[in-house]
Image (cartoon, rainbow, N blue to C red; front, side, top):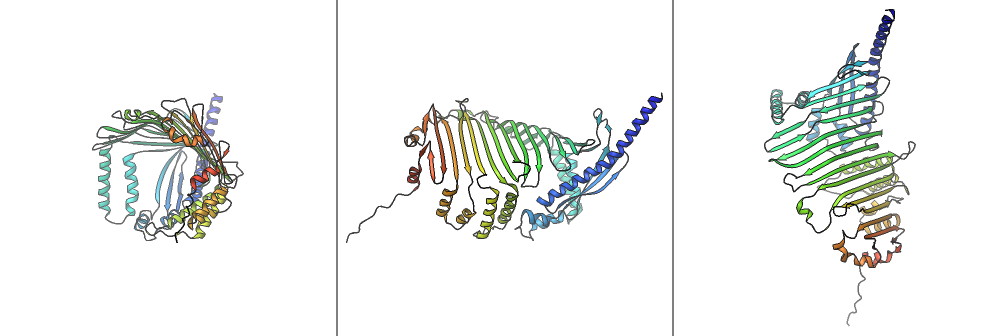
Length: 515
């Protein structure tokens, strides 16, 4: 009996200690998260600030209150520096956000939860609502910010909510839940948005139940997550215009500095996309997209960016199949940009953004040379000499030859040591700019295409085959080219003279005037 009593007392002590620790640590983590968010805002979106106004902690739970402050002037100065300060839309936004937006949050402390079975955690933050209630809540928060007849505004809001409820075939439930584990800065979040089905007149839009799972570090904004949407269907007058099945979007942020210095992966996959397929005349395809961004190493400011895409044609319309030439079945493409100086690139993009905001489309003016030189110098520092290269790889299989790969590889190496090129173009000296490119650029090209695909174009290729610019070998048309130091080598042969003949205008024929 004493052992049981001792165990119960020990369990109570642990329980009470866990509750006290959860209250202290949860507030600490949330404060750190708010600080990290604000550091990001200061760099990329000045004028936006998140404030933790209150954190009222009880023994078993807590209530947190946040305020989102938006200084429209500061924000527009950053995003659109050339925007007219007296612009009516800016004034409208200032009225809308002249007071902070307040958000309240309920927090439940652990160490155990019994919502869906037994779960151990430090704290759980839940959000439950419906789409119409969420719209109504946001509108009630914003309506008092506008001048005018508040009663009329409220009546218009009620009409809008009523119309929204009529358009929605059923209420849309929104559920999100975040869990803070013990002894960790990582927050686990899961959520779901119920199926959205809008039926208005002749138009039907259905978005399947959206689910989300993610893990985020509250101290440095890194993390990973995944969104899933089973289907998106759009119909008009009972004809299916568009359908997407099994859409998945995932991300992995392994380092985040600011809007221009992002390091991580972003993947987009759709298992099937039907376009105009209801009458049997549409196209069906699968799409995959992957963006990777990472530093060369943690001590370097250089980073690499790579984009990979794959499009697989699952179904062609009948009239397209009847065409005399072969059609692509799978197209895989990749782009990579290597050796980019992140800090210089971010600074240069911000300068370029400011420059664009000063251009008047109705009254274009010649760009001042110092602006061109400044941007060009920044690009020169961003694309490091003899380091930065741009690569494109293309791989295509066709319907009639699905096992044969037609490939293209293109590489462009930057060797610009000054920002003179843009200045030459701005001054209208295109000839001098062309000479500059000839001196500084390096290009490599390799291509291999099945001869059967280009059979109808063979007469057009005869001249290139005779000159050695294209080789017909093993059922493929192949070429390999390299341009460097004003010399063009194609399939191992110097083609500089031939290219010069092709691009140079013929010399005028001298004429003799009669006396």
